[in-house]
Length: 306
Image 1: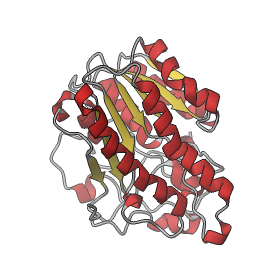
Image 2 (image 1 turned 90 degrees about the vertical axis):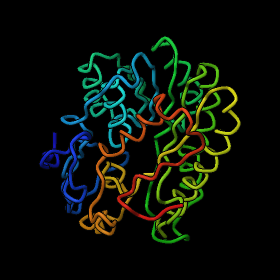
Image 3 (image 1 turned 135 degrees about the horizontal axis):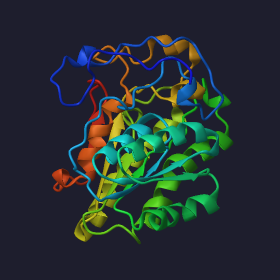
Image 4 (image 1 turned 120 degrees about the vertical axis):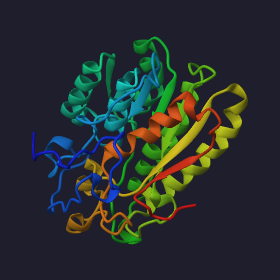
C-alpha cells in the first residue's frame, strides 16, 4: 500500500492541541505519478481521518454524493460524513478504483451505505447521469459535494495548451454547473451543495493559470447560486483549501522539485492534511450552518484571503 501514513501525536478534531504540531510537518521526497495518482503510492501517505475522526450524528440519515471521493479531501469528507450518519456515493476515475474501494470500506465500517460510481467527468454521458444514478442507489439525495478537480502545473503560458485549459474548465467548473443542475431535481429544502475552491482563487500560482481561474469561477458560482436557491431552502457554500497533501500534488499538480517544501510557506509552517478539511464540509452540510449561504470557508493554515 505504499509508504506509511503520516504519524503524529493525537491529530483528532476534539482535543485541544497546538495546530503547528497537530499534524506532522512533512517534507515529501521528489516523486511523480501519472495522473490521476493514487494515495496508496504516495510518500508519505495522506491522513484522511481514518483513525481520528469522531462523529456526532450531525448528518444522520442524509444521503450524499461526493466527486473525487477516492482520496484526498473527498475521501476525508466521505469518511466524516459516514461517521456523522450519512450514506455516501463516491464518484471517481476508474484508475482510482483501489483507493475508492478502501474508502468505501471505511464508510461501511461506520455502518453506512457506500455506492461506487467510477467514471470520467470529461465523459458527458457519465457526467449527465451521475446525480440520478447516485440518487437512485441511495434512495434520494440531500448533499452534493463538488470536489473533483484537475490540476496540472505548466511553467509558461506558451506551454499551456488549449486542450489542457478546456479539460481543466470542464472538470473543475462546467461539471459543477451540470451536477448542481441535476441535483436540484432531488435536493429537498434543507439540502446542501458544497463546492471545493482553493487559495489559488486569491493567490494564483504562475504555474497554475488554468486551475486558479477555475477556482475563482467556483467562488462566484457558489455565491450567485447560493442567492438563487436560498428561497428554496437549499444552501450553497464553498471550502477553499490551502496547500493540502493529496495525490493531485504528486501527479503533476506541483513541480516535483518543489514537493520537499510543499506547504512550508504557510503561517503554520506545514502542509495541511485532508483530515483537517472534513469538519468544514460537515459544518456546511449540517443544520448547524442553517444561516450560512454563499460563504467560502478558508482552510489554509493562516494564508490571508478575502
